Length: 102
Image (cartoon, rainbow, N blue to C red; front, top):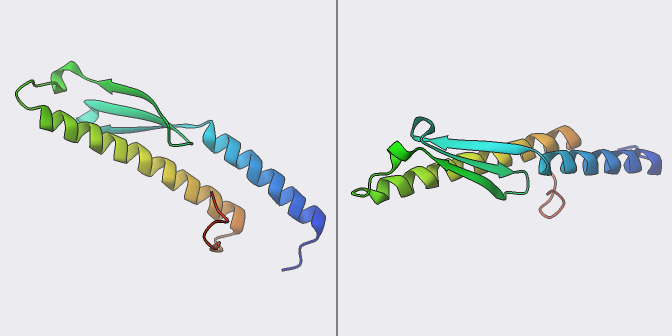
């Protein structure tokens, strides 16, 4: 690879900007046809949880727990996918060794 210092600095600045954009983005995971939604930012922090009252059955709390877990996993997966796409865009699809990514 024929990178000079200026190219590396530009790449680093671009990566920092993309990281900031990702961290400031929001991702929504849902389950039960939207009965439970979880909003998460690009830092994997849950910022909101919405539960449709119809999804709450006092006789079946385990179903609600499963819906929350599934919505969380959906949101987490979307953040992870966005992060992987960003890294692929930055590296041209080249795999980085562990510890050099996000």
